[in-house]
Structures are given as structure tokens and as C-alpha cells.
Image (cartoon, rainbow, N blue to C red; front, side):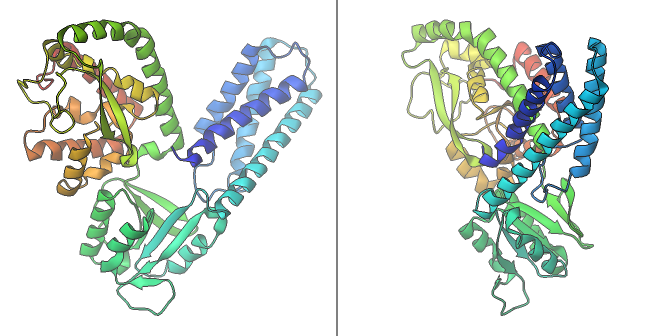
Length: 447
């Protein structure tokens, strides 16, 4: 997790502390029990969620959502008075308006302090994004104005265009952009579509998808080769953001993470707490060796982590190189049962609880498989824009287990990308339901 990912949770906690502290300090001691405070704080969170209040954009500042703050606070005030009315407190309207004015002042002070320190942090180089421009067109100067604002955190590296220039920031023709991106670890690529041929645009999109780079297109009338696009406005410049997943939304990301923590916690306490000692006995009786099988896998942004399973094979040298196959001689008797019922996967809820995996997402592959498929399967690395899952859309659609032919990994990748682009809580629920149904029936590919 990046440090910047903590901005929203910290702001939420600070807001709740300010609200609770102010209401307790400036009101009679018998006004607010924990139930009343819980109701008021919950009401604040619900309003902020539905009003999309917390800052998620790089260009947001103190004034950009000030009108939204006023709307949120007015709605919150209505909820506040509603709680007081239901509690039938004998309160002074004048005093409560005073309390709310103090509260709004404290919240605005925090807002000002937050944006001030975020600006200073970015000026010092934190929360930055390296960017280049491909193709110089009318939007170039406007983009440069944005990149020059140090508080936005952009680190502009130059532009590429087939029209040779003597400008200091000119880096060369468009064909050289791929080497430059790889060498300088560029985060964001801004393309003026009017300056690129269809072939060049296609190649840049393909390169970005296969190298975990964000590409944003300043459109003209050219065709853009993808379904998942989001239109963003940078001042007056319309920019298309390709491959933007719903999980890039802060609320969606933390909502999914909250679900992962609760779900995995329940499984760990309610199931693994007694299943682990039982599996220890069953596995040890048949085959000497450790209870857990751990293996390096690639997760979010190709970050390596250890994925845990109950050991279902006899200890062997090929476990980190060779996938299990049908009638695999390495699989033990108890191993056949726990693989058929997917019990062997349950320790991965520990990975979920630790934040390395999610309950639902693209399945993580062995390191050597990632290295193989990232060069042989088009857009394979796009699936690494999300945390890997214990189960996924590809698995419930029949693409789990052994990869027998090339179409297996191609279709698995296609479904993983579809999941990223179309994610929703409802889709996750459907996948979990299908996974449980398949486990109870016994999946024919679970071997």
C-alpha cells in the first residue's frame, strides 16, 4: 500500500474525533451516550459516502469541494437535530447552533491544514507521478501549466513527437517512447491522439497494458481500442483514462477491503481455528513434512508474497515449478480430498486478512508462470492491477487449475480483465456463491 492510500482513512478518523470531541465538550454530560455518538458519526459517514466528499483527485484543493462541504454539513446538521429530537432532550436551539458553528470551524481548520501539508509533501517529492506526453498538439501548453504546479505532484519528463524540435523537453520521435518509459519508470502517459497514427496509438495502448502503465488520451476523432474508459477534465482539456477500474475509486477500494477483513476474520475464527489442528494430524499421519505449503506468487503490481495452502502433496523439488496435473503422483490421499473440496485453499484467508490477497480477484500464479505469460499472452499483466483472489470470475467460469492449452490462459486473462473493468459488490457476491456451489458439488477441475 502506498502512503498516499492512508490519506482518506486518516481524514475519516480525524473527522470522527473532531465531531465526537466537540459534541461531548460543548454539551451537557448527559446529552450523548455512546449510542447517540455512534448514530451521529454513522450519519456523517453515510452523507460523505453518498456525496463523494473525501478528496480522491490529484487536482483537488481547499476550495474545489468547499460547496460540497457546505452541503454535507447542512445535511449533517439536520441529522444532528433529529437525534436530539428523538432523545427528547431539553436543548437550547441557540446553544446547539453555537456548537455546530464551533464544529464547522474545527472541520474547516482541519481541511485547510490537510491540504496545506499535502501540498508541502508533494513539493518535497512525495505522492508524485512521473509523466510524459506523446504527441505535441494544442493541449500541450495546458498540460504543461498543470505539470508545472508543484503541489499537484507531477514530475514531467518530456514529450515525444515525430516532428523534430530543438526544445529542451523534446525527447525524440514516437518510436523511441517505449525504451524511455521502461528506462525511466514512467507512471503516466498522456497521448494527443491527433498526433498519432492508428498503429502508434494501438502500440502504446498494448505496451501500457503489458507493462502496468497508466495511459490517458487527449482525444480527437480517432478510434480508441478499449472498452473501459473514463473521461476526466483537466481544466478545459478532456482526457480519456484507459483501464480505469471501479476499484480505483477510494470508497470501492476500502469497501472491498473492509469486506475482506470481516469475511476472512470470520473464516479464521470460525473455521481455521479448529480445522488447522485437525489438518495437522491428517496430513502428518500420511506424509512427513510441514502442514502448510507456501509459495512465492505475484500480487498487486507484481509485488511478490508468500501464498499459503494446506500441503496436499508429498514434499518434492518440483513444487515451485510444476503445476498439479490430473492423476499427479505427488498428491497424497488426503491431498486428493482437500483439493477436490478446495479445503487446501482455506489458509489463503490469512493472506486476505494480511492484505496481500482479496476474497475475490484474479488468481495468483507462480513466479515462473508470470514471467512466461507476461511475454507470451497479450495484456496478461493487466490482471495485476488488482489484488489476487482466493476465487475469481475465471475460476467459476471453468478456467481453474491446470493450464492444458494456450486458450486456457488467454480466456482466463480475458475474464480477469473483464472482472477488473466491471467490478461491483454484486459481481463479487455472485462469484462467491458460485464458488461455494462448485465446492459442494465437487469441481471436476479440482485435482
